[in-house]
Length: 193
Image 1 (cartoon, one colour):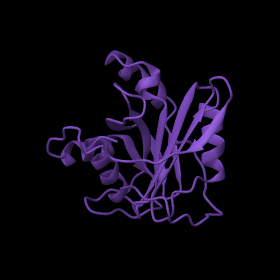
Image 2 (cartoon, one colour; image 1 turned 120 degrees about the horizontal axis):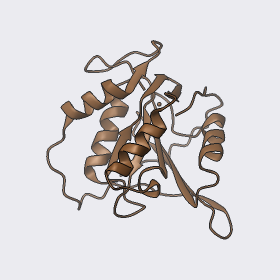
Image 3 (cartoon, helix red, strand yellow; image 1 turned 90 degrees about the vertical axis):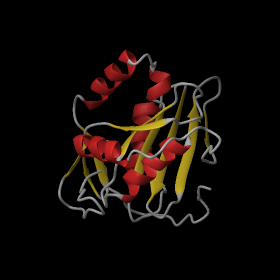
Image 4 (cartoon, one colour; image 1 turned 90 degrees about the horizontal axis):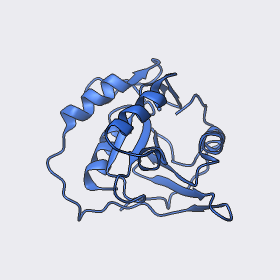
């Protein structure tokens, strides 16, 4: 993650008790997320459901900006508020269903405990999956944070179904196709430095 993308993702994660999700934007290198973009979504503390046209609208907007699908739709990011970042069975089903035929895809989950889960799946030659380390590249330039713009994007994209509590600025929102969580496994060694 660039410093900017990481700051924005953490802001989203810590400003709502609901999930929040979207895609990592990787315009220059497939393993460097330069921005986190939220799609229109309905959320609860344990679910995210993109609105029907959200993915198509997002892809159209990204193509208009000059990006190809592999630069904007291969890093699936969402948060797990107040729980660990281990993928649920529905996360796993969604990742397989949506990204199973892509040449590569990454699932990244951030918890409000600042622990994360990150896994890459490749389908070139022999299909593989591997848990990978996530890090912040502090060598990239990073101007001032833009919490006002992040809040505006969040408020426009994320709609709470009313089950969670908000933190900070009055948010009660969050993220990726409806799913419930359960059977969490404690995995305390998944920290981001």
